[in-house]
Amino acid sequence: MFQNLFQNLVFGNNLNIFQIDMSDRQGILKISLIFFKKGDSGMKAKKGVVIERVFDAPREAVYRAWTRPDLITKWWGPEGFSAPSINVDLKVGGKYVFAMHGPKGSEWDRDMYSAGIYKEIVPNAKLVVTDYFSDKNGEMLEPADVGQDPDFPKVSKVTVLFEELEGGKTKLSIIYPKPETKEQLEAMNKSGMKEGWNSSLDKLQRVLERK
Image (cartoon, rainbow, N blue to C red; front, side, top):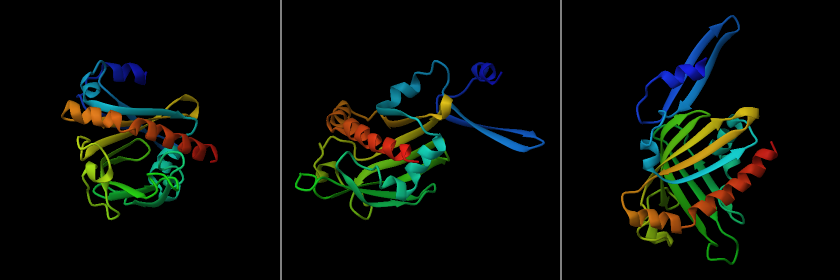
């Protein structure tokens, strides 16, 4: 019934969160739904880099692993990297500052920081944040200052979606918007960010399996 209803509604081009309250004698059941306009190509056109993974874990657990410092520190950074410092101010306008440290003796044997601002928070469903390279205090740095291609975007607005699937599974989507120039997109693709994210998500999967 709900599927047919939603297919017949007309929505805008942006991602929408809808909450429906259904009352009964047992209380109120709240359902959050995330969807795009059917046939919408606008969102696809805005995507630059997309990383997706399905976890055999409820989305509450996946969301918790993304927002609790004690859990983030267990998976942040690719294989062989540690996360010596994770700071989260989980509120709209709050800042996060994450550090990762590479293997001893490697070129990454140092603390490297990324930071950003929480722009939108829908618990267990969606996070929208800015993302940029930073110093330990969360102050923005130029990509070239941390060894990246100068064309790499200085700041990105990243959307993280947590989609509930059948069987208690969760689809995680990390969406970086398409940057302004072709050179910026090429710099993103050459940076190894997809490989780094997928390696980090391998670690996250192990964290969730231990829950």
